[in-house]
Image 1: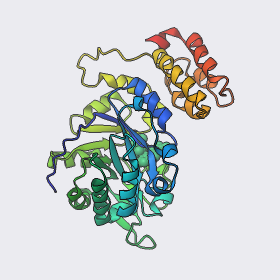
Image 2: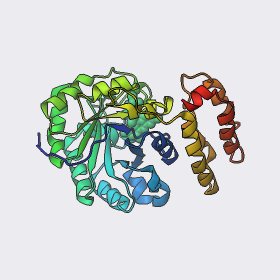
Image 3: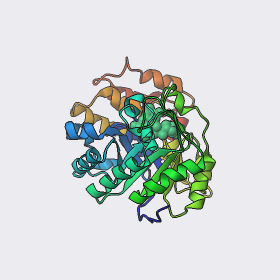
Image 4: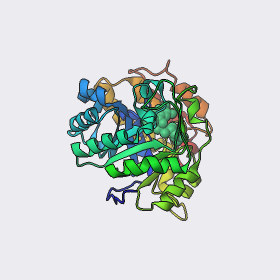
Length: 346
Ligand SMILES: Cc1cc2nc3c(=O)[nH]c(=O)nc-3n(C[C@H](O)[C@H](O)[C@H](O)COP(=O)(O)O)c2cc1C
């Protein structure tokens, strides 16, 4: 394994790249609750950056703090161009997606399918490194099961187990990625929807922990299934960081509670749900004035009261039929009046 010691700052927590979820309003909302986490963009294909409206695709507000851009690419040339074009936006790092099992992505030889061609991954990462002085990171799976880059028609490629993962990383590490985010579930590239592949096959954290144990100089972040402060704290004793995906939109207030990480007596005050809403209101006003989509602005709020008294009522108030550009601020102010005060302000 290439012994490259990156001087990148690894945040203890990051919020995963998630298409249709981790857009800039969601990230702003996350940032209100957690100042330290690294926030990822949705995956953007290199081709979309090369051919698209850059400001529409890549613009984000400075007050989102540290944001990593995730790209999907199938060749070094596109990856190089996309990273160069993204240079003028203030992303703190650029990440290569080698984990997405979607046919639309893997059929185009991107995402998890790339793991079947370690040399290509090496070349793409090297091109990204050449294009920028920013940190370049990779998000990949512990393995893949299905078709790969080399022969995506008939041959079933299975890459599973620690030895196969090491074989992949030995080549990839030569490109000196600054961090490895390892999704602890194999990607199934045929016969399972991406949604089902988020539950099947089972997670295998031990393979990720072993990687860090054997190569302590690598910057390793684990991903998959983290939903509680306790499980995240436990993982942080074994790896450098934890990436949180679905929990960030299924139970978003977790992000406020994550400020308690490593605080032995857990006394750190988290921002209250009421304060979160109060801080989000001026943002919503500004963004509505700029013409931002009202449903995208309302979406990140949906799980703020998850598991709490009044959660159902909260969701009803924010239902898509109620939410309109002329009603959203009124709804948010109303929520501050009608939700149980002990839940709003504690
Ligand atoms: C709605 C949705 C969209 C996703 N989009 C991406 C993506 O764009 N890029 C990526 O690398 N992973 C994507 N993923 C996978 C997540 O980043 C993460 O690896 C996965 O959800 C496992 O983490 P979790 O168990 O904490 O949710 C997506 C997941 C979900 C649920």
